[in-house]
Length: 284
Image 1 (spheres, one colour):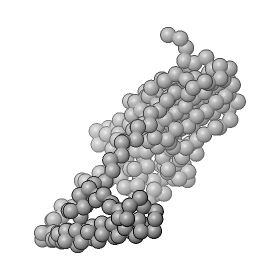
Image 2 (cartoon, one colour):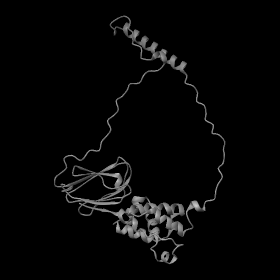
Image 3 (spheres, rainbow, N blue to C red):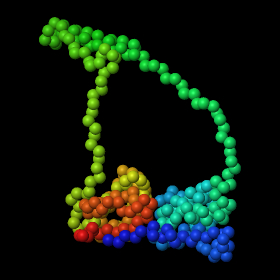
Image 4 (cartoon, one colour):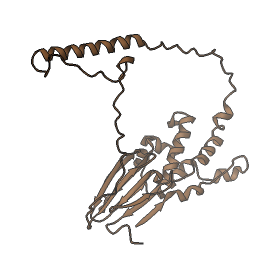
């Protein structure tokens, strides 16, 4: 079993302050070059990054070429940089700081102070009191109708006596009927795969506490799945040789391999590469 964690490259983003060393800033790789190199090192295509971040493919290409005009403004450019950096295993905040240094600073530094507008106290409409008298009258009418129905049924010979009495419902005097208490349904539990074939590898992924982009390929290199799975969703993959996975957020994916619970496959926000075969997990 081979596991690759792309988050180990987070500290490799060159940190340059253009005001301190303009020569070094000119020689440092651009933001787009850093993102492109990290994506290639992670073994991801532009289409895979687009699927994981929901950033359109032309915009991903434009960012890697340092063409941020396609983003539609500084606000969207910062968001796209953070998303792409997270998927390829980089520190998004450091890249955003470099972007702000090259484009006039952060929005907080450029935003003028504004005065709060006092719109006055918020008026909350009063809620009317419940009409208990109407509820009591309705309950009495229902009870009288039920008694009358039982009396008529007794005269037709369907009752054992000439008159029938019906038990009054609990709480009829106050116009309310106590609802029946239903026992709580048992909470569903994520169970390991039972009776898995011994000559195949079976992997079940369950999203827990978050969302993760998942890419799965079989032993012949065929793509089995490329999409996001959200909290509570699961996917199961089976192949005679191997299952190769790439996860955008290992801390949100619980894995069951060949019927055994392996727990979460990484930390929050960690990009994880992992491959499983029919013999996994190994003893010990």
